[in-house]
Length: 396
Ligand code: ADP
Image (cartoon, rainbow, N blue to C red; front, side, top):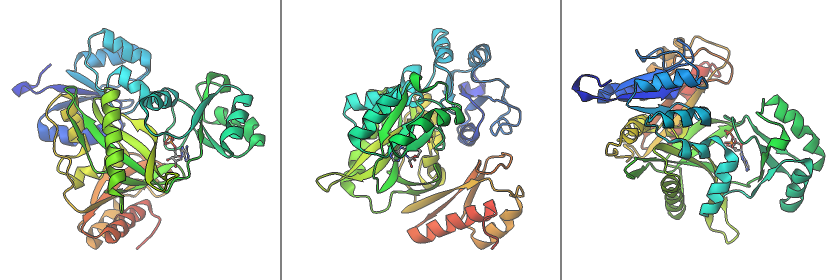
């Protein structure tokens, strides 16, 4: 199994852009990556020589894949618990483990656990009937937010329930988002948090229990999709930065997370005027809110994830520049992305581009750009300009 030099094989289930970007760090470290990809054209399959094709829900395909790996990790959180249990029974080393991953797969389980740990969360409830929804809304005030416990991403699986009359539309919404079950199977209800902005705390934790945290970042979402990330979060009150980081490291420890953990949060004002946070959700893998770290920190999230899942000492997460801004490149209608390079590179030699080799579809994450600088506003403008130009939103 081991490559020459005793280097281990890290298996990644899922061939998306996260596995692809992990390959860059794996190459540098001499670690061999193997990816179970959904298709030969999957983003990672295009750059990882060992990319067997198989579906993450196919028990036998995943088992066979895992046999040739020293450790298995994940490109997304959609591997079914039964498949994870089978790997565990086979003695496969998985990071994160099935037990930890549950809290990134199931928002109801996550809410319940974080509430028990005393981590600040939006007020929430489980609803199985229209009466449950009405009772929650009447109790905490309309509008409220409803979420499918499983399978949501990029804001899919989240809806606003404006008032009691809108309860009837929940069934249609569950149908429309392809929810695994109807209302009777349980829907997560949350208060609509009146937040000042969205933050994310990215930490890594190794099986030995070592932890490392990058600075708290600000994430900007447009229609449920993350479009921009600013590292560190501008004008963050130091007390809140420390509180949020401590919460993320505590979650990593209590849930026994191994690898990178992203904790998405809302920044709020507490009743006494102090700044506070509410945890929105968890991701147990490298995360969009950490892409800035590839160019903007001593150790980027992909290298850190590899170190963590191999139980190697963690790298230094300190930023290399006062500010790094990341802007996502979303699919528009123009698929001639490469044509944009000449203009962007000529205009701004400091822009770093990361494209994922994916076909263009409206709204699809095709890549990202980063700009590191001593000047926040300049970095924001430069990163957004490059992303907009790649998307075809602007032409000069
Ligand atoms: P997904 O898992 O589909 O990405 P999230 O739970 O992250 O869904 O929600 C997507 C977006 O919806 C969030 O980034 C935030 O802007 C908004 N949102 C989610 N939950 C709440 C809430 N309780 N209050 C206010 N806004 C919310």
